[in-house]
Length: 315
Image 1 (cartoon, rainbow, N blue to C red):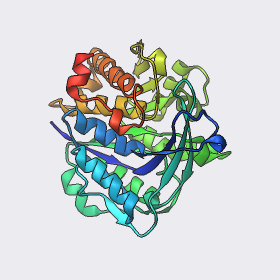
Image 2: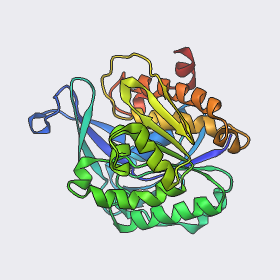
Image 3: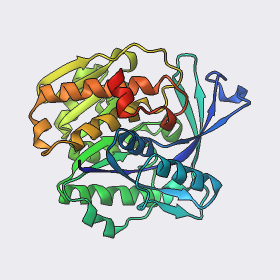
Image 4: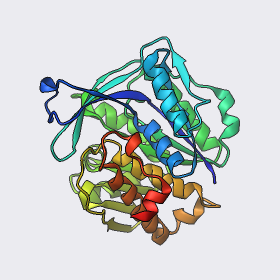
């Protein structure tokens, strides 16, 4: 089993459970561990894979809580950093159908500095780059680009998820697109939501969006479409992989569970080429990853809701 290195933010999600989608009316919040790359690392480790988290939290009680959560989930946190800046917070509202919205108070996640000594661990493994806060400037953005270069020079399988958050980019979507393009170009696997695929490609039709993003350089594209399933696109092959019917409580982390499950399966391959030219194998992997995403929506919070391998196989 190859190792998966997940780079990006780790933060506190304060979830306004059962308060609806209007945060101004929320009264009670529940503290959850969050951050897309950290969720992916936990998804992999809960399935029995080997995952490492590379990111920064504050040297405060919230940071200690977050690192402890990852440690409890058997994620290797030896590459994580702590900062004198306060831990990043996200306030999450939930609609009745489980869809969510975010308001961020950024802090320590942006302080991640590049550590060249980590390169010795990368050869032939996988790197997942989750970009919710990583392209907003500061140390994190510089570090993020350097780890992409390391991944390229160390023959890693590269996965990219833009994790677009409206609250973070406001009316600056074109800057978001520009900053994402080098990662789309260099990645073997890109995981998009429908909104992300449309924003990055400039195309409304999801299949046309995939064609445009393949032209940029992405080899494998998955577009997660919630209850409608996932569109898998590779070369000239495109197919909708159905999801399974569930009653969602909270969709937070569903996409992270999906990509984590997919990377877990890829990490188990002897050679990455086995999927780069095997569409049928990818279809089976995406089908299993869809199940992981669906299971995660049936509970509140991301990490606590991620399935174990036995739970996934029992479905």
